[in-house]
Image (cartoon, rainbow, N blue to C red; front, side, top):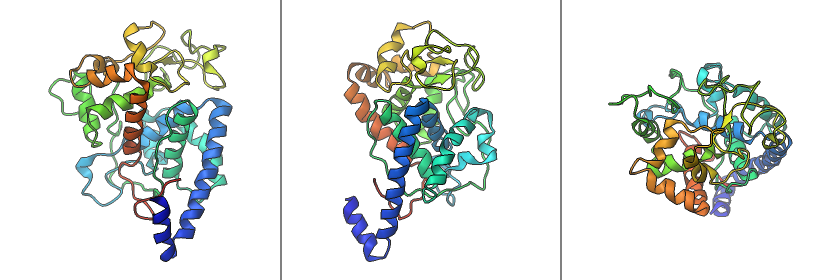
Length: 310
């Protein structure tokens, strides 16, 4: 399909431009892969892309682009990157800056999403069938922090009947992204990599200067990471697998599970997906690929229209 699309572009003089963008993105992919292996930075690249995408609200879908938000690269703006919800993510942008300089043809919106998909794959996760050609945008209508992203702890944000109900909150947030309950559980599985930090979210007691048995400086689970500390959801938090689902019920005292995590094991509509993903990693990977792709395209404007694949 991509080949046919390129042929059509070629008729109208755009095929060469797509070929250049594709080559630049392939180069960027190699540079991101090298950076992830060099400093074990996969989790923060995934978080960066999530927080860029997570500004989307389908209630604003009828407004002129890019006022619905989404994966448009706007997380680079002072309004977003300096907000509390995005604490620590300036570091991720610094990791990507040299790559952007090496491939100026690639938009920031594309590079941020490419970084996340590459990080998942390099960490042992699935290869995600991504689409590229995103145009960078900055909404004229500024959202208030936390930009519609999920809360970890109550009282939960949103027009909820019960501010202590994590299931209500998750649905409020994800339904704005045009996601369903299966998407919610699959995307929550990305917590198999990464850590929460006192210095960022304030949701755990461990900061950069201390940590758990799995995160403190000198611990083998850090691999090449330049940042110690925090508290992880899983023991081996630099490996993308289904351990988020297989291990949560064990209540490992060295790991964290927030109410928005635990509810996936008990809510009658979340639980079947949670149980399946715990039993079958291939099923998790298949669902995750589809949900990640949806998340990465929220609110996007593509050039050429319809985008292209690598």
